[in-house]
Structure formats: C-alpha cells, structure tokens
Amino acid sequence: MISVTRHTYKFNSLPEALEGFRIAHITDIHRSHFTSDRVIRKALALAMMEKPDLILLTGDYVTESSTDIEPCGHLLSVLSASKGICAVLGNHDYNAGASSVTRMLTRLGITVLNNSNVRLENGLCIAGLEDDRYGRPEPGRALHGIGSSEPLLVLAHNPAVAELLAHRRCLVLSGHTHGGQILLPVLTPRELKRIGAKHYRWGWYRVGEAELYVNRGIGQVGLPIRFLCRPEVAIFTLGSSG
Image (cartoon, rainbow, N blue to C red; front, top):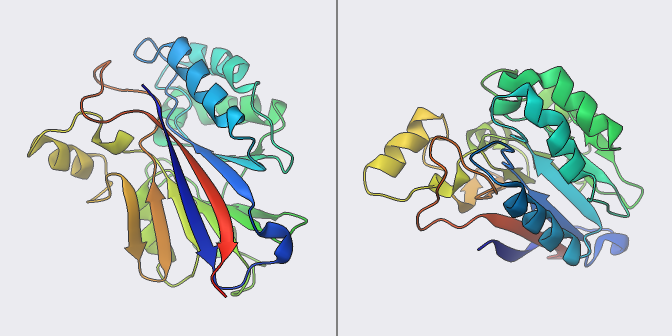
C-alpha cells in the first residue's frame, strides 16, 4: 500500500498568491523488473488526485537499463499541474543514461534543473542540484539570482547534499534512501552510509538554516520488497509564519 503523507511548510514571508499552494513530491520511481508498473501507476494516480499546483520529482526514474527510460516516460505522461513540473536526476539515472533520461523528461514538458533555478510567476523559486555521485552539485550556480528573502524550494536527490545549503533558509526535498526500504537494526543504518546518505533516512530534518524532507519514494532496488517501509507520495501545502 502506498502512503500519501501531508505536510504544511511555512515561510517567514510568503506572497499572498502562494498561501495554500500545493506541491506533490514524487521520487525514486525505479521503473524496472523490481518495481511493477501497477505500483507506479497507482502512486502517480494518487498524486494527481491531490490536485497539486506544482509537481516536483527528485530522481531515479529508472534503475540501470536504458530500455526502461521510454516506458517510464509513458507512465509519467499522466502527470500535470497548473504551475508545471520540475525535476532533477538521481544516481541511477546516470547509470542508465543521464542525457536520455533528460531528453525523456524534457519531451514531457518537465523542467530539468541541473544546478539551475526557475522563478514562478507567483514568486516561488525552485532550484535543482546535480547528483553528488555522478554530477557535481553547485549551490552557487543553482541559487544564482535568488534573493535571500525569497521563498525557495531546492531539489536534491541525495539528502546529504542539503548540508551544502545549511547557510540558507529553504525547504530541501530529497529521496535516494527509499526510507531504508528494509528496516532492520544495524543493516539499515549501514546501508544508508553505504549510499552516502549519512543518517538521513526518512522524514524531517533541520540542517542549519535549511529544512529537509526525505521522501521514502516509490520503487525498490536490490530486492523487490519493502519491509516496514511503505512507498510514499508527499503533499506539501505552503503557508506563512509571519
């Protein structure tokens, strides 16, 4: 069963147009023989049922085979949001072919943010960092032109990358960990360290001035199972704390 988790995130100063703005965060789809299309379709349908204003994707659309890229694109084609869809790549996307995954996303009208950003007409800024294993995350480039008081969301596949943003008030959305996928003492913390995620497994973390949310994702790698760790679609509603 797929969980739909709901969260409220409050910025110190938020334009009136962003009050109640809804975002769907989807990550780690991992289209492969380990993750059935049925599960992926269900997760995407659940996201669309929430009627998000914006959809954000944080990588690992496929696991390792380039033959999964176009079928994954067919599945993703059901997604739409009034303010668009933004994405970054994950480490597995590089294994399958980063340029091919990027072309697939771009053909669907999805904005791929490689150390770059966009500013929506309502004032929300969205930045994306490259994967830290096969790319080179550059916060200076990714946040170029964004004022320190502007509301900012940052997409980073690996949650450990949020430490590069500890100086900046923002919300960082990540995946990569699958929430541990299989939760067992000793094994799960060791696996998180092996993939470079440090102690960031799932849920909310404070990283300096930044706040980080780690999504459990949709798919599986290694073993075609999840244990005590359900797939997740995360929904965020924006508000003002001022």
